[in-house]
Length: 485
Image (cartoon, rainbow, N blue to C red; front, top):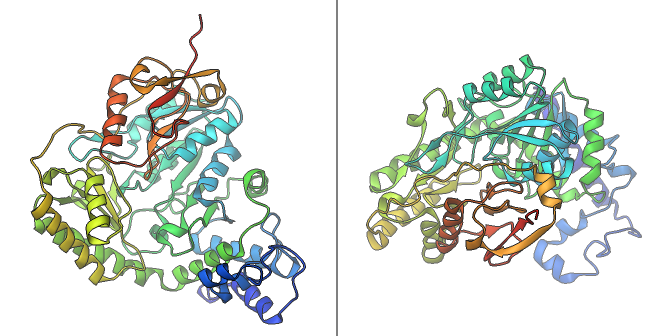
């Protein structure tokens, strides 16, 4: 990494120069630097609305960058160790989908773990690729899916030598890491591309003694959520590309779906955040690791909870662990993660990232302070004292292995009928059902609905999980494929 060059922030600099020129706007956006919408100025501030501008020659164009955006992307590639980087303003959803759409054509096979984010399955609906799922191992006590085992991936590759790529989640929301170098090597040995959904791994490029990053492992493409742990604005992301991939073609794929009205607020936040991480990331993430380790120790001392970490590493399904992740098993106090999530927000004014049926996740990053950690620990101790219940053993696994009957695209566009969810066992699902976050579908288009999955969905709904996906607003019905008579 060229540290001297990393001190530059070309988009930010160009915006500041433009702001000082006081150019009269006869272009979009229509608020005209906020003059047409004073409430927007009151909400966001004059400085912010003054740089909410349209693409123009002095500021470049994200659809075909030739100046300041091009330079910002080159700096991002240098900072992350990639051959090329794309600034993305449609979220990491668009980065994941661009990876898959760049690699897969209709009918192509792609090997992936079933516990992928919904963006990956939606990409299959768009391009018509056929998923070859690797069912992840599950920690049935913690109720979490684990990483992709090398032996399982090898079996899938040998059974499907015509597959074009392997998609890897790394790290997971819970901090679980796979053998990334081994999986990339396996893909390349069989002339497949290695794609990594690295939404929760921005810090792996900059923090000390953290698990291997995708570009370090030699992956061909990686989707990085800069707004999660990297400090940029929500919805901003970076797509990293390795030397084996045609970056020009990837750019064309991105332009199929990404906006032609890219936000300079988002792009400048990526530019500034990249500079911040390149110059100060190692120091910042060392503090994040220390805070997370301190929180784990304090929470485990409370009793009843289990804040897990590197002790889970087994060299296979948990090849490594991201110590910045503060995932806490809550069933030891008789409460689901979503129940603790709700109590923290409603009773203690603490907003954590998510709660599922067994765990909660507090996202620790560069903006956190030790006093905030102490407040969280104190609240958890209070919840244990006031709200704990006898431990229940129902629903010990957070992942149920599905049976894929038809491709996601075929199922999504097939003729369907809507049935009460309790009457759908044995039918083929025509839509997705998930808790969000984390956004991993319990059901995806083309999968056989079982009674176990129905019970799981209804239990998650009863416990207050935020359910998404189906056409039915209250998740009382599911769209299923019409049966051939």
